[in-house]
Image 1 (cartoon, rainbow, N blue to C red):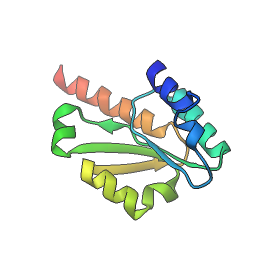
Image 2: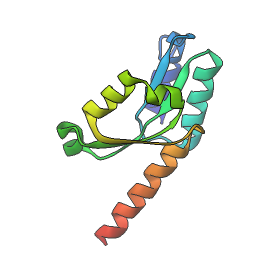
Image 3: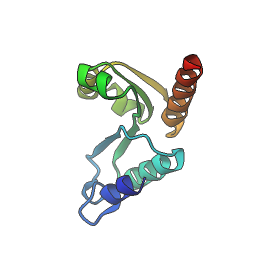
Length: 119
């Protein structure tokens, strides 16, 4: 969380460059409150925000089989360029709600389910 906050909030960081034409897609695994805070800051500057944490690790990332668990701007999620980008990196992308935090919640459920099947 500290590294992400530093990159996002630095004087020359992500938020400093956000304007009304900006679209931010964050694929990090962070706390729900961190995602909500970043979304609120981007939207306050007129930008759009999509939370998109992934299910998968190094091998799915290398083979383009990640699963994106998204929440936030549905309009941004549905844009052809965004869909093409998500499709290039993953085998699936799911949109849950426009309330940021639901992507993080979905990732927690997926991770919990994976751990329970390994026991």
